View 1 (cartoon, one colour):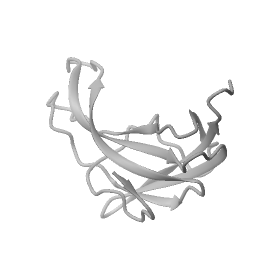
View 2 (cartoon, one colour):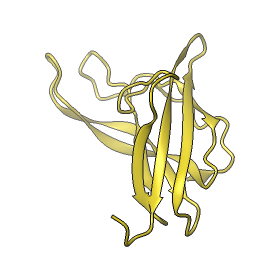
View 3 (cartoon, rainbow, N blue to C red):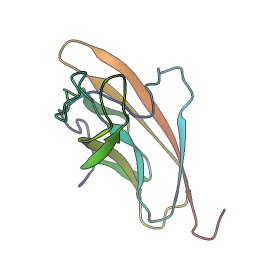
Length: 136
């Protein structure tokens, strides 16, 4: 699903989106081709008890909406690496993705912050480059 505009994307759990970034950190650079959706990251909370039921994830909110596209969420299956006594396993995850406007080529940006009922976690910024199919 693609939502336009999105103020609250989903109330479901914690974040493992390529590491958390503070507001002062440089944005994560992402590239895609025109008319192609790109995954920005996965929202996942692997439990410490080695289970496969995800833990709570903070509510993602768009702090800055993209100017030339849309942000959406989709439930996917994620591979969780073995850590300590826990074996590698598959778990449900929420993929955060960006879809550029039809035929858009250029730069766009997105800022997402995460909130639980009692705390705010650091936000993430993405700088998205959308290339024509023949560009390298």
